Image (cartoon, rainbow, N blue to C red; front, top):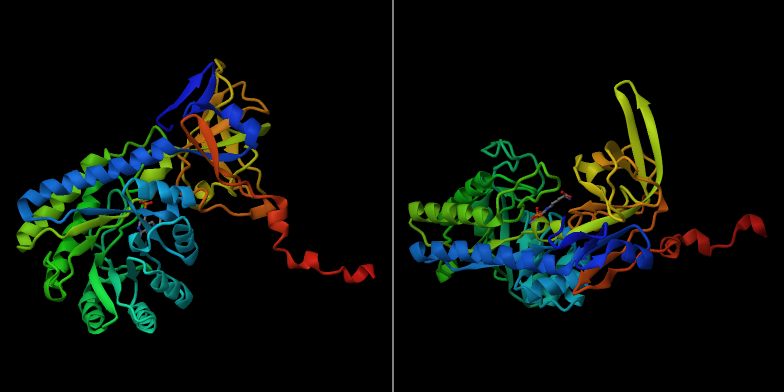
Length: 452
Ligand code: LLP
């Protein structure tokens, strides 16, 4: 539950406002983010990494940290502005995210552009805007970005994404020789591509990049990836100085995990930052190079815990199974606003938000309203046995990858994104309407041929 969530007279409040009052004004479902929590987390992760790498600096002359917010987690104009206000840069991965950041007033130099298949149009838009860096994902893309920069008469700063062979899963993070995924280029192919990039006068290589995965709890995976990247960085001439074609920076990606249920216990971000900085410093010492300027790209860690989705309970249906009764509690949203349970088997936790209840807990499955049996919001949740139609149900930690993954499956309009700050609720993204949806159906503009 977001810091600052509390029950007052039984009703859950977030940021000092009753969720019942928000439901009355805005309807359900809605995603509510607590601005103070988002900003506090942005500040906290930046401070944690700055502090960790400042210690490293004492030993090996490090050059500080840039924190990019990974906009794919949740990007709206206001969210982009909050990040800038907290000293973060913005990482985008499509022309749509780029346009959001630019129109929100983010300085182009503070933007990094990712993606394994940026279109020429997207590349040109980024070059024309003067964005800080492109992250090159393939040899073909290096040529495309170089050509676009040349056409625009610019020198474009770039990073090169490396697939470093570290598996992000909590346990088997160690080397796999077989890197069967689409992002980046293998370590073995990096020297040739770096040489090629250095030949292209319209590109300036500022550093290497890697991202080992998302929702990672184990700092050891980050440490291993940092060690390998430092080795490559040293081998390819990144000495920590900007002299002579050497690239000064190293981007270690995002992926810091959060708690979705009481069963999750990620280490504090300060611990992860320290471990990562230690790994970087040790590797730099061993290699006899200075600690490069480090970037990270957290998304989920910043916004995930700050969001709560509020649904209204519609129907309740006990289903008799051999092993007992399973009670399906259906709400007015589901996989359209949170695809993560269906996509990843993601676990969440839910509470009745509109009232307190002393009723005996009952094992329920919270289901959505979409026409698909996999449309589950929370697979197994103990809710008060008197849960009833009309109750508001709040699902925690939905700030990241829920709105951004939302769909219109079953022609369901997407819920709004609201923000609470200082006791005031503001709309970040308004609720979609049926007219928004039907407005794209070109057939509705045509005469019905049968009618004439
Ligand atoms: N940097 C790069 C290059 C990435 O690909 C990602 C996430 C991030 C940073 C941010 O990762 P984070 O700190 O948020 O873990 N839809 C999935 C997550 C996909 C993540 C994709 N890349 C989910 O809902 O769990």
